[in-house]
Figure 1 (tube, rainbow, N blue to C red):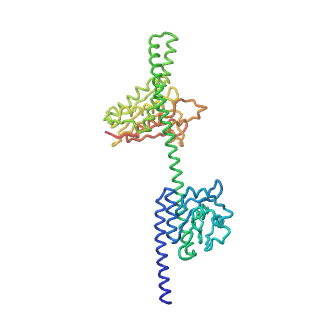
Figure 2 (tube, rainbow, N blue to C red):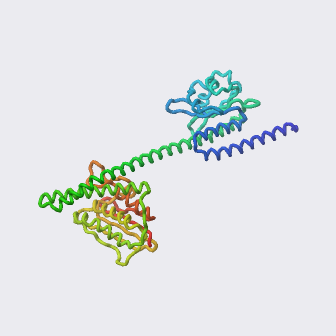
Figure 3 (tube, rainbow, N blue to C red):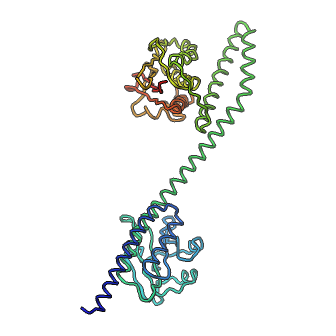
Length: 417
């Protein structure tokens, strides 16, 4: 073997090593680039560099049309390129897409499939062309083309390099698309949540003034009225009080969603917190002949919580138990020292919870019954608010039930003071 041929082989090996290194670098960069426009420009620039050619372009498949369209090309405006429809049945790119095979043409102008409109638009006279399909598993998603190799025509070695580049590019483009779709979906969800929060805030604010007037007049009427008129006033007062409770719940939910609720931890016995909550629900429990049973020790068990917010959380748990308990049954409220934390619970003998619904019941506006056949009231936000208030204080809350008709127990773990 002559010295000249050895030198040529050495240069060829060095060139392949450089290409392989660049392909590895490309793979790393592609997998860390999630902006679609930056990604497309990176692919065309890398393909141009690797093959030492004048330009490269990416054509992607549009499933809705269906057709190919230019997503990017060296030195061209992607928006203007995208306006050029590339027929699948009568173009070079279409041939590559249909056959799923690389195509090397070192005399493009003589090929009838050459799409002259593209050459005119990018203002590049295409002499030589190498195109390869872009595949994801068994699905072709587009075509990667390189044109006008400097010095000579394209080779089979060039086709291998461009095919590897196309494989990396197809996966990266698909990942970027999925990321973009996820971001758009999250944005829509956030916008929807903002609209909902604004509505809840406005509704709560606008209804408070007329509701305050109703409560005031109903109170005066109840004090002065007698007989049947007193009963009517009592009904109005109860309904208005219930409406005020709903508005308070809506307002609390909005504050939790917007992270605007202030938490002021205080060292306080858990027994006091549970006592405050029991005082608020005694009337509701007595109307349904429910017995509230205490199950905690007399020695104070101190917790480090916001008394008002934690009381509200247990009021919501107790109201939930009252709503779903049969008349004449009992509700147990307990607490126990667990060393570094304190557990409290509310246990009822009500309708129970299906195992697959133990997590869903804490979701906003979730109802255990279909809306058109409901037997129990409520907006479906009491448990959501309870969870938000407990978790905002580094606590935990969950539900336990052996199934429908078996009652349920809501357990809360709070930081010990």
